[in-house]
Image 1 (cartoon, rainbow, N blue to C red):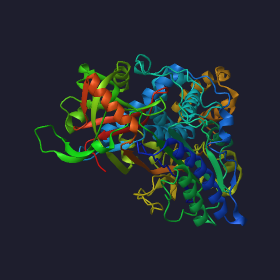
Image 2: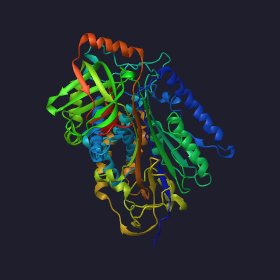
Image 3: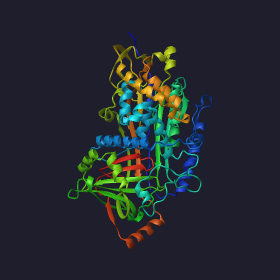
Image 4: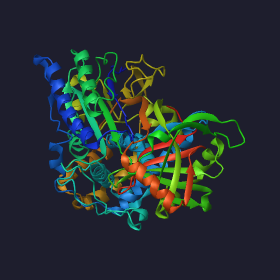
Amino acid sequence: MNLLKLCSFIILLLTFCIISGKSEKADDLIESYFDGFQQGQAAVAARWPEQYQPKSNAVNLLHTSTDRFARPEQFDERISNVMAKNILNFAHLIGAQLNSLERSEIFSPLSIMSALSLLTLGAKGRSYQELKQFIGLDNDSELMSNPPKFYREFALMLAEIQHRHKNETEESTRKQPNWRTTNFNASPMRPTTNGRNKPEHIVRIANGIFIQNNYALNSHYKQVATSLYDSDLTQLDYQHHPRVSRDYINAWVNTNTHGKITKIINGNIPANTNMLLASVLYFKGFWETSFFPKATTEENFYQDGLNKPPIRVQMMATGGRFPFYDAKEYDCRIIGLPYSGNETTMYVIQPNNSTRQKLREMQYFLDAEKIDNMIDKMVRKTTVMVFPKMHFAQDFNMKSLLQRLGVKDIFNSATSDLSLIGDIAQYSHNAPPANNLHSVQSRRPTIDISLAQEHLDRYNEPALVFSSRNGEINEAFTNSETNARETTILSRIQRQANYLNPDFNADALMHLEEQRVNTQNYRSDLFVDEIIHKVDFAVDEQGTEAAAATLTYLHRSGTDVIFRGDTPFLILIRHDPTKLVLFYGIINKPEL
């Protein structure tokens, strides 16, 4: 009777964002952001014990990492559009599941996709099948026949929204929404800068992989994670220095959120942790047309229609020429609030005569295709707008939600297969790691389904927690059908390998696909305990002198549209060139 040894693999997913029009000069904010990043790195090094410096091949996210993207690969517009629609569609699925009608919900589809794609990269068998179906690999014949293309294209999109190019002012060649090109005040799709080659709005996605110093990653997985996804990779010692490891990771997060989150791990990291992955999304935006600070007042918000008792919220006001479309075919209206920089927009979709129930019903039929169709029909119109001031700090456990949406295997300790993450060759030759793995030709463990003691505060620390449990092996495991299907896919990939640019690690991706279909590989006992997602989201005014001049223009020119955000609505924060949705919000109850 073979017993499995207890080991832990923790992946910590942190999603943080601020969407704000706060009255703060962009030059000062961005300068302090870059300075703060360097100071944060220095602070981490200063606190680290001399005898235990982290061994790292990490590349500075904001500076030297741009060298990797000095000659960006040409994107595939069709595949990019397919992937953007996939992300928006699963955002709808998640949003429909989350909408309880009792409160507002905000989450980041892009951050969730970033984490799940890294998870998919290291998965096999049924775990892989469920993940790739959820992230949309099965929705396109080209992606089905060539899965590495998904990772390559997604990496290109992430690089573009963060301006990881040699020349920050380089014009994007992606197609932009019609309202940006067919109106008198639209400008070319070029990132606006402050004169020092730094963008007016900030989007940063940082992945940090923190490994136990005697735990080996699959070299191909490590190559793709660090080079393709631009992840930091650092070796720590959870076994002998758990507090120092915790402080290092907290400092890394503090740096990458510009000091907005100073601590995400309060207790000690378990000593049997092999790996921890933190994923951070930070967004700071400035309105193209700001709200009038002195016009903010307390007004009614009608959750269930104008004939029902309202709640009181802080309402902002502004005016200008905003992209708008009255979608009578979908019984709703859509308006866009562009952010400075001519790239990112907050789209607000409000059902006619909206209520909480009507908003929920709209979520079920308003898919990505319909939303893209509405955005394509938007034109700038002279508008007076009233919109709630909001600030949400939320976290929620996604485990049960993803299980309802078909992602189940990674949460099952008996069947989860994430064996492409660790160094399988090492496990098959060295005795200690072999206790943590079992051959797919052997038998499954019987697992106690009760949860282990939490090592992280589930309410304060967004995390993907991976671990294995003690148990007896008593059941055969086979997966011949899946392997046969994936072997066919592999043969197609091999014929198309030259499509991938060497700079995007085609060789490493190919090796991972070979390992994915190799039945002789070992299957690790890593599985997901839970997935916790956290977002900090704020919308407020930006007080500038230009706002008063705009208001005067409105009175002279007349008004085409009056838009009142005083009934429930959806919001999408979208990077328009790539169509990637950074944030998705269901606003049933604006809060501060």
